[in-house]
Length: 330
Image 1 (cartoon, rainbow, N blue to C red):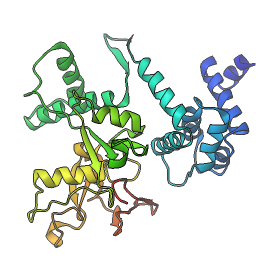
Image 2 (cartoon, helix red, strand yellow; image 1 turned 30 degrees about the horizontal axis):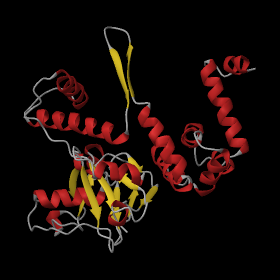
Image 3 (cartoon, helix red, strand yellow; image 1 turned 60 degrees about the vertical axis):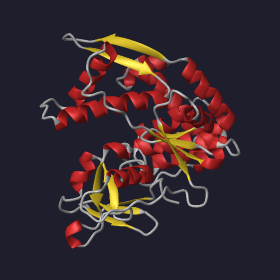
């Protein structure tokens, strides 16, 4: 049967098996995802993200996650993040068991390709993977500032090779990876999900492991219980001080454009109200944008509006609007 499906759909046997499993899930325990697919809110690829995120759990847990999902103005990455976050809340014990099993199954794999090129895969805990990427990214940025003509992708790859093989690494750059956890959870009084910037929510157990690891190189950001915000630090000049830059990065966590999850510490800071029009250099007027989306701020037809509660509304040249409240605001 699956062989016939594979032939008729012009896909491999494995692809046919995935399609069949997705169809079974949509018609049995993911009804709201199926409804969103039928109404054109998502496509098959986005439906697959929900299925893949929940396939490890029981059908009852997956159905509960499905019932809580919202699909408006979501891209594949943000939809999968929402499914993962809900899964952690609906089934915290199961999530932690799977997280530990994934950690135990960590591995590195190499796949040799054509023309003298190979691909190296590493299945790692998210915090380790994020730290390695951040170190390679910092290496690439430092090289670019020195006038290196290689692309950022080339520099990250070359940086990884130099780091693994013991080469010099541009003055030994320090990677910055932020882990956000509220004080009661850090103390073990609560078990609220924490966040690994650029990756998404992580279990409280994993966050505490990172926070109390004597060899940890990650920056743990403990939120103040009453407001959830760090201390404000301002400066009256066009360019932010290092303290202000760090504050904005800690506050916003990722690129400010809805649906982009590049960590804020690797983004540009931009004045929401232009400096030339009286905009200040402070926490209210600064937002982090990744390099790609920073360029959109000055493009014709793109509009950005920020509410008092930190909500950002982006209007595209074709009139579509996307609204999101950044994680760092309460």
